[in-house]
Image (tube, rainbow, N blue to C red; front, side):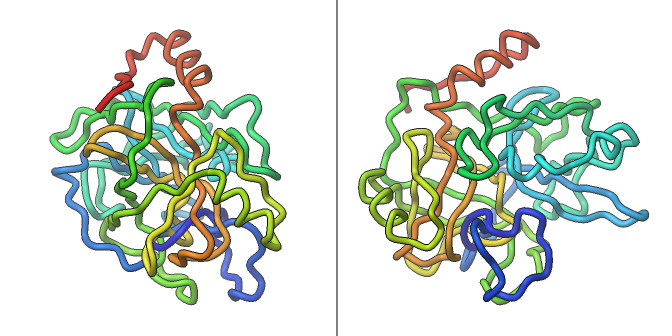
Length: 270
């Protein structure tokens, strides 16, 4: 479950071929779905076989939140025939309850080049009402991120391994000052900018990696502060993982909430 969204489509590339983003959790520990009922997986079906697509979090009775980058290339036709769905209620993404996707709502200003506004909602057709399915709270516009947070995902455990984890992983990360993070990436070969709508995180030899994109980052066990978005390497402290900053997405989140009368739970203070 190493670091950020570098394998958005999870194609089998050699490390030397990877350019840009990559999300998965490296050196994580097993996570309990009983304690983290909001964590879920996005799965796509192709030729009668299921493929793990990305991580997500339950935010409403019929709603999940994820990164726009992991659903950006999903054809509408796949949704129309029921080939995109959410798996939840289990640490094993293959064994979770199946919720067929109904519609994807991406941020209207999502930029697939810079990954700015990398956030989307996936609405499903059946309710999240299982024993281990529960919405996470959303950081409000006045929420102040603290130093430590938890990251969740099923991504690969190594930069050199394309095998996804069968069991849900978690790791503790440290939130990095954006000014420092911006300087780091300004010197990198990525050419990607870190904006105020993003959060940076590090933890030596642990973090997100390929396949972790879209996964939740929480504080106080149930407040969503970030979505795994992008990065340069997996689990290396010299290049932070970059997250979508929930507190800076209040306008988009509230617009979806109001339009569909969902009733998201917001937290401006722990």
